[in-house]
Length: 281
Image (cartoon, rainbow, N blue to C red; front, side, top):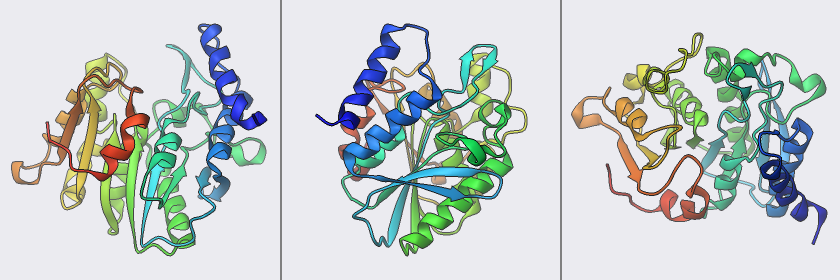
């Protein structure tokens, strides 16, 4: 067994055994690199203006008429309830795993600002960008710019955006800026930030945009939003509140999957969910 194939399970097991001890940023970067390496995916660093954004792409992909871009969640944003993390690189990059499992073979992965990067590439990285300002206009603009670079790389005429958790908010906000989005999909997506913070008794995300406020720009885009029936982090009511902002005849599809929570069991089920029809909530 190669070191890359062995490293990710060891890191995650160590984190579990350590209880509340969070793996270091270096360990978390290595974990994602291991996931990508196992699948043969390669890393790109994209200059997106305010930030450098990390991406992972499959080496066999040379062209895609419709490019699917997976956007990561908020990652390890907090050490505890009152202490922001120094580095928001996720403990386990679920959106990367979803991208790798996409059976259509035309998918790439895009990280959020300050995830995976170090040194000079950490420019602009203050904790506000993974706490209250995680969906700030400059975050959305940088993600949009990175997606345009990926689109140009593969000669795509349109994009499909898939966002996990907080990446769902970014995907929706980017989609609201663009005229070439073929479809918007989210998994446990934070689609109505004020409904989420109120329901979870959290402070409002001051300085962030709310995807629900962009409903008019999103009304013409084909959408499907998955929520886990057992998800206590991003309960189904958040997606329902977002859908409720649209007129009845333009309401996007919300699919609540029984037994799923914020992490389980999206990766295993994803090849079936991403390609096939789904029953609305």
